[in-house]
Image (cartoon, rainbow, N blue to C red; front, side, top):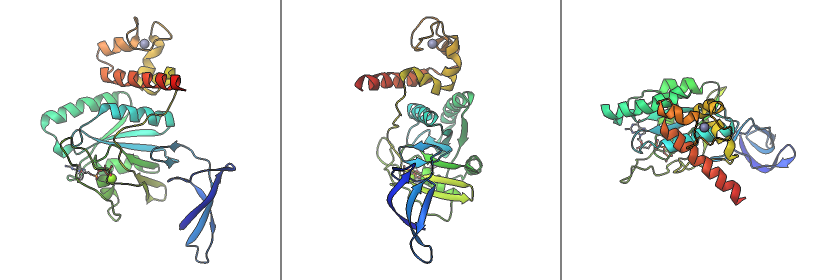
Length: 275
Ligand SMILES: Nc1nc2c(ncn2[C@@H]2O[C@H](COP(=O)(O)OP(=O)(O)OP(=O)(O)O)[C@@H](O)[C@H]2O)c(=O)[nH]1
Ligand SMILES: [Mg+2]
Ligand SMILES: [Zn+2]
């Protein structure tokens, strides 16, 4: 139904209607083809950028190259979805581009994420691989494909929705960056209970503000270790008796995960001071 919005309300407050919202519509013509959105239902979750309401899952699409894998972006994204209370699945697309050595490097990264509880799916658009696993993980949920520009979100969605049109474009330039081909968020129905959104790619993952002390709670392997640190105000940086350091030394926690945790920790401390 084609709708316009005129001061839609959520709990009596004016709100910007977003993709994924459940709304009440006042029908304005006889054949019910047009309406006005007047009421927005309570949101189960909300992702602000891009604005998406009621997501239960985000599928974070990456590739090992074209564009190059950025584990800091992955970790910032996983942190953000944990703060928003939305489950995250990680897809590594474009596996057709990888040499044996690169595939082995990717496998080492995948193992790290699997070890801390994330679901990992490998995919390739030309080989049409990984698509059924992605569909399985989306089934019965409202989900969104997100990720840096050019990783293949729209290309994968066009395999899942062969009858819909998606704009896709070549990754260009020496740095192998995408060109921001998708410009708006589009929610598609796979079946009655399954919705998937294509979203515009981004170059940088914004993280929501939390207390710096709680950042560790959103890094599963760090969260599991912190009760065993010697000091209960341990920041897990270079303090003596830090269990996180011990687990990094024994190879159980990836050193780069701690680096990314610390960067977010410092960013949160800076933000608090700015306030
Ligand atoms: N070799 C290879 N190329 C791929 C694969 N998936 C996508 N591509 C190519 O990567 C380029 C970018 O794909 P898109 O689907 O437009 O990427 P996107 O993530 O939607 O990009 P934005 O809309 O800018 O965020 C296109 O040229 C695709 O043909 C893949 O699995 N393998
Ligand atoms: Mg796209
Ligand atoms: Zn510690």
